[in-house]
Structures are given as structure tokens and as C-alpha cells.
Length: 264
Ligand code: SF4
Ligand code: SF4
Image 1 (tube, rainbow, N blue to C red):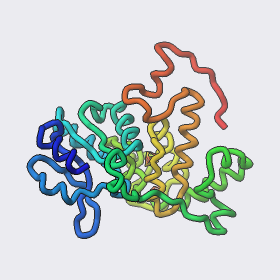
Image 2 (spheres, rainbow, N blue to C red; image 1 turned 90 degrees about the horizontal axis):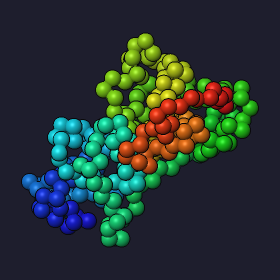
Image 3 (cartoon, rainbow, N blue to C red; image 1 turned 90 degrees about the vertical axis):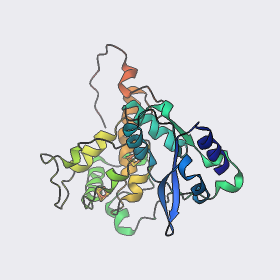
């Protein structure tokens, strides 16, 4: 894989490659180019998941026309598709390089997310992060709301979920809008903080799981966004990230009359 990237950079087929390099024992995002080819020896091919996609968007916006490669996988492709739909990247400018396509010895054991075993309090009052949308939906309505509120009130408003998200790119974030959420204070506005973010993830979240992994309060965020996107799927038959040029509402066509439906 390193040799292939080297050859692309040397030939000019790729202007730069965004991957990871080890710095003091930690994988740090690093830009490899023709000017620093020797550094490719330090490229980490089995780095843990980290949202390089937002860096790709920033780089392509600051240098339009650049031909960029990025270390990634299917999740990266889906995130870039979403960013393309929202005009943050041009798909023809970026190529995802998946280590799994190269030599088996370079595949390595990429770190996968693991959901922790719930303790007795979480099982009694909260939501087991391992459950699926249908299992939560099957709970009694009041019980379900109580359990979500228990989870939301654990939030310390650290913004980790937003900051790690590969499809969060807004320059002005509603989660910092003083009329909705006051920054620099705890407690978190429950449930507005989480509902605002959930609504923004409708038609966008690619279920990478990084928000939940980053959350210090172990809130089942992935499940929340899966629920929101199951509604998008139900209403619009639309799955996020499958295409780079089809926004969710385009499936409605030119002129549509929506029937009001209860959302359970
Ligand atoms: S799972 Fe979380 S971090 Fe990943 S795309 Fe969805 S909201 Fe963003
Ligand atoms: S990462 Fe968790 S604790 Fe931090 S703001 Fe998001 S939900 Fe709240």
C-alpha cells in the first residue's frame, strides 16, 4: 500500500495523501506528499477510526482542485458521500484508500468499537446500548421516555459527540445557539440538546458509532440517531451515504403532497 501511494504521489496522480503517522506513540493525522515521500515509511495503515473526512472537507475547500487520497473504508466513503451532498467536498477530488484492498499482512487488526456491558443501574433505569431500535420501540411509551431522560441527564455538554462526527460541518452550530443551549454551563438542557442534534442527524448520520464511543456519559447516541434515520427511511425510503448526489428530499420528486402521519 505504501508503494502504491508513493507511486501515485510521484506521478502526480495524487497531490497528497491524508493518513496517520505515529508521533510519540500516538497515531496523528498526517499529510503525505511528494515533498515528504520518505515519511511514508511511518504511515500507520491500521489506525483506529478517526474522522479524517472533516479534514478532507477543510483541505478541499482551502485548495480547490487538489487531488487528495485519504485512508479509510466503507464508512469513510459514506461520510464523504454525505459531505458531497451537502456541498462540502467534490467527490471527484478525493479517493478513499482502504488498507483491506492491499496485502493481507498490511490489513492488521483495526480497532473496532465495543459496547460495554451495562451495569445494574443502567439496566434498571436507562437504555442498554446494545439494543436495537425495535427493542426500544417495544417498550411501554412512558417507560421509554423515562429511560431516555435518564440517559440524557447524564450529559455533561462536552460537545465530544459533535466534534468527533464526520458529517458535522456547520460553521454556526445550533448547539451553541444561546436561545437553545447556553454554552459554558452545566447542566445540559434536557432533552433539547439531544433532540436538536438528533434532528440534525436525520438524513445525515452514517452510523459510524464514533459519537457514542467518544461520549464520556455512555449515552446510547447511535441508537438515538438510528431511530431518527429509521423514520427517514420509512418516510422517504432513503439511506444515508449510499450516493454522493442524491439528497434525501430529492426522492420526493418535483411536487409532492405529504400526508400527515403519526410518528411513534
Ligand atoms: S454515528 Fe454519531 S459520529 Fe457517526 S455519523 Fe452518526 S452522529 Fe456522527
Ligand atoms: S459526548 Fe456525551 S456527554 Fe458529551 S455532549 Fe455529547 S452526549 Fe453529552
